[in-house]
Image (tube, rainbow, N blue to C red; front, side, top):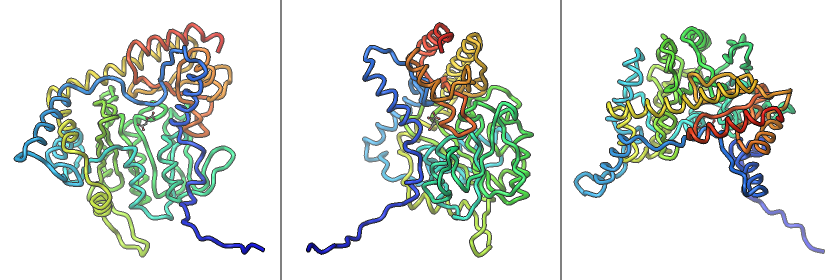
Length: 420
Ligand code: MLT
């Protein structure tokens, strides 16, 4: 008889097995590819993932080309840069994005990175395992999935919600801004202008969160990747425009959507030195120190060439060029809003944000509407339910595309809407 041999094997992070099958956007891409293979003549227009289409601003390209030349000369060549980013970029960000708007942020509190998607996930490295965590519903899926990966949740239930997370519904009834929870939570993810609903937060609303976080010694993880799309002058661009936020908030910013850096990769995270959390034995620690330690160990900084490109965003030419880009996408959003409204659909967002949040017609589920739109109009959007249970019955249309594609997509939807 053969002997049974027990083989020991490397184990995995079991938390990955709790994740839903695929990350939302690759899953959409998979379905679109299947459709495209079966319908090779279909002219598919993608208004799903929020990826920019317009070229990099000239000011950024010129700065990057100059930086490439510097890399070709021994006297100006750069090897490893500071893990936190070059001081000339951090200073410009602190001055322009924060101090000029009344936010008291020092350049040393700014950490340059290769993306706010990465940073919103990576930030969990510096927090403990027993924290209570609140997310809005619907929500940018990265916040949820990275908590699952980190072991901060239990399994997923039949509604698609993970045990151990507090879901705060954002609906048309509350203007897509969550109610402040009655219970205490340690970490709260907020995103304004909001992905996916396109909603914005007033200073008064953010003040309520800051007051809550300070009273409860909670930390707000504030994603402001879409702040450049704010056109209403009364709305805050940063949480640090709210008094007291230095004691309770980390902010994530990006050059992806304002300057077209989705493929170029540059972003930054702000961790004020006044932000404290406690050790398991109860003493206070500066989160800045931990994030600085984390970045200097796990990250070698963004390339010199790309940081020079990002710096050019703050030049007068760069400022006017990024404003043109933002205006262009906002005009797309306006066209989407108008055409869909004319077609009889109810739409939200898309005014101070590049996303339009659409109520699906005739009680269709989000994925049913996705399939119908793909099959009937060859237009791709993002099913609201992919962002959470409360997103069911909604659909997100991204304004990031060429004018020609946006107009053609809206034309097709308006024409065929009655059959949807
Ligand atoms: C989205 O479509 O929600 C965006 O691609 C988010 C991101 O920038 O990762």
